[in-house]
Length: 134
Ligand SMILES: [Zn+2]
Image 1: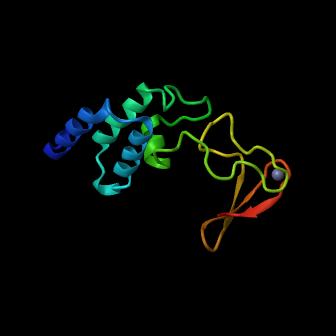
Image 2: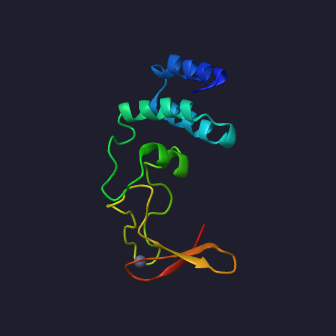
Image 3: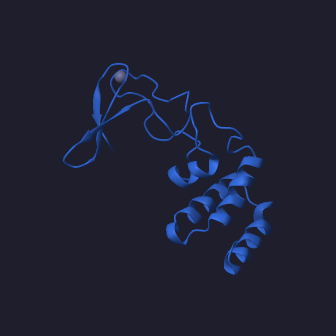
């Protein structure tokens, strides 16, 4: 059950929904998500459902992606559905987009530093060349 405050926010979003552009709606969703612990899942669902209805977000996920659209927004952000940044290998220029899983996933392989316990670089699956993480 949404709280009273949430219900008011949902109503406010629904009132402006027909007047906002796709880009404005994506920005509003990004802002809501970035409230993190204070963000409202119910409000985000209203925006996400509208983005699916407008076909900004796909209705069905690519075969290799087993998340639903809500999980994608929550885990990867409002712009998960488009590739941004480097999408080709800096060495062999191979296209690193993963056509099976779709955006935002890339075919590059993470190189992790065991001491730092995080990914510090990438490797191209085609030429095996490596580069540092941005
Ligand atoms: Zn390469």
